[in-house]
Length: 409
Image (cartoon, rainbow, N blue to C red; front, side):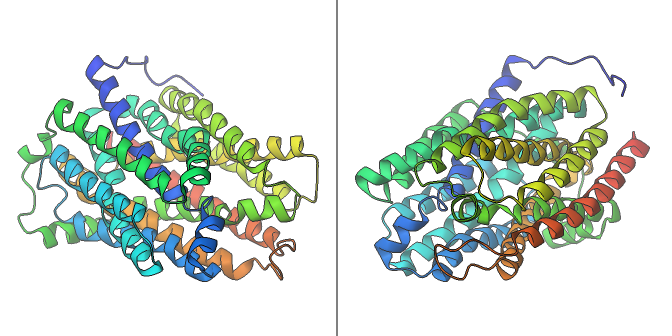
């Protein structure tokens, strides 16, 4: 490996942009992730079946995917700051509706509304990052942006569970509304307009703009690599808690510790991997991380009951693989679109990521079997094999993305 370029320092304004976008990502990620730990309380409170709860979770992902596709044609027509503010306020309204839901139908409607707006925020944020930061800085930026995932586990989920035990399952959504509202006001007051892409002539018709983006062969390679990245990483995730409790004999009291340790790990790893991605070849970092993850997945999915300390170590190893793939892959993919196409590209890319995650969860649900509510999960190792095969194809696709970028530069 050889150093690419001398590390470029962030300006104070760039640092602010990273911080506020990372905080907004934290609120969106927490809203999505908090549904899983609240599952038992929700099902008991509303007398929901497991399939009903599953639909409440996947409803967000699929509505977010549809929203991204519908928005893609218009995403490069407006100031990106205004787009971010519009979708963020819709997300806040949807989350507020979750906090006042008293019936299953109200909850489903609220989750769909939240997904319609929340699913686009990530793509708009990524377009802003691609506009404001050159490629040699983007790995570090992506690393900090993805820290919202770790922060939601370290702070968001434990605090949410604490609040829900005192004031009910709705209270975490009230907290998220408060945090997101503060973030929205700061973005409104301090973020400068992001309009440079408007100076470049593009398709006048939004549908034609969408079609031209999808029709671009290089872009389709990026879309496929993102879909494979999402499927490979998300197929195991929904069943992680059930596998830990029923197969590895982790207790309900130990489970928050497992979340917290994984979150602390991600807070450390994300910036480190981002920095390495800017100093060394991004694809090489991604390939090494993918090989690491395949090995860990094959070991982890075959575990039997072991001491909790070993479970923590294996969970950290798994988290290292997941996060170390995500940062360089996203940095590479963000370099594919031309400036006038970035909004559309990021919207479609985000949509496919959401939809692919929903498909992965559905396929995983068809593979894994649990005969009773307390019996061990069966065929979890099969999910590990399928996931590893997809990881290999993901490496091949990200390699093609990397080669396209090198040829263009």
